[in-house]
Amino acid sequence: EHVTTEDTLNFVLDAEKQGANVGATITPQHLLFNRCALFAGNRMRPHNFCLPILKRERHRKALLEAVASGTSKRLFLGTDSAPHPIGAKESACGCAGCYTAPHAMSLYAKAFDSTPYGVTHLRAFACENGADFYGLPRNLESDGVMTLERTP
Image 1: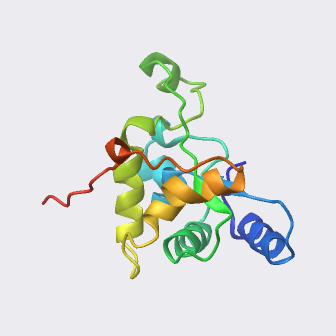
Image 2 (image 1 turned 120 degrees about the horizontal axis):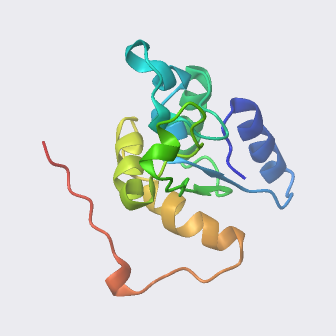
């Protein structure tokens, strides 16, 4: 389900070109971090440990370019909602998962905004592509609108 490498990204993009019914989610942590985030500061960072594990920088950049540029309608938001107790994360055999759900939109916005495209394609990625792929109606309720605000 979660695309994490340039190879799997290309698989989805090629399948889309061929008309195959293939889609994939991308987590915010795979757009923001590479595998170095697991050991930043020369120590294990258990809250950055997730499965699929974070990959090399070239994979992060490829994923970010694809979603921020709006290249594909088959790529959509997929948080890693894994709320483990702190003791389960910060242990010798820590649980995998980055609990991003409460902050997902701000994390995605940060990632998208770091590109030349800005947040231009964020709405499609977050609100439209997934619904369209699964044949579900888009949520068009006016009270479902989210406003992003940049703060210093």
